[in-house]
Length: 333
Image (tube, rainbow, N blue to C red; front, top):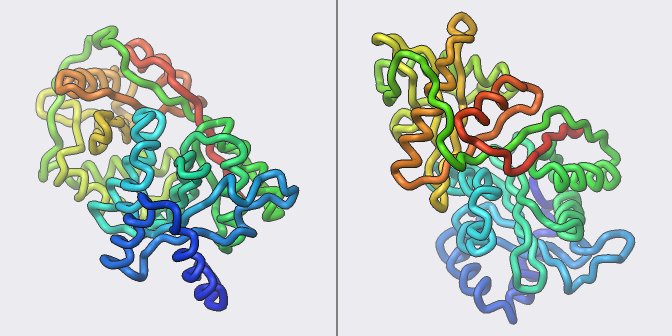
């Protein structure tokens, strides 16, 4: 369980006291409690808001926990909307969980009444994903999550913030924090070089399902991601029109996925070409054509690349993508 049964009554009583003087969140909380009483958000106790050094005031930073992604989107809307590119991954996860109903854990950090950070863990066995936030908010988050008894398997997010979280978590939980992947966030600022590759972009359809499952599993294997839900993920993506392929004379040669738009931003992911079809420019052509299509539709396009793959970083820069930020993934042992 997330919280020991013995502490449940104390935490629920804390909610009603805490919500006084915070009219906006009070209204949101009442609505959530009426619709889903078992998922109503609650403030974590005072002891969870202070560092052991006492440098964080009890009244300065507060952390709110919820299992309702819709509540998080409403209560942190202004904060998340302020940086739609940097917050896109969090926004995408939250919107997806609202639509699909998959379980998750969500924490919101407040400085006074202002949202200053969000942490998401969904699926529940996955590492936490965090937004950029200042160091004091990171410390408040670590204290709150650790005190709640959640055993995070890792964390990923903005490089400096993830490093700070991993360091605090390692010290607090006496665990080993190992960085294992550096990522770079790119945004398409202008359409660059057009790949000279024969073929055309098209939506993947029902007849491509088996191939999309096969390629998605291969992609997940290459990046070290769990493939336990591949078929469900592909079926949802196909139904939403998010899977695209580069078609050469009726043969699919590469794929890419366009995530659901969030605040006018679309993230491209799942770019994959099977080994026997690589080094022909299919992936570059697919991403270029898809980016152009989305840009003409009025969207901002972003994507993440592995910093350990210089080829893909070079290709995306030629297409017109420019680096916006770096992120790090940590594993906790």
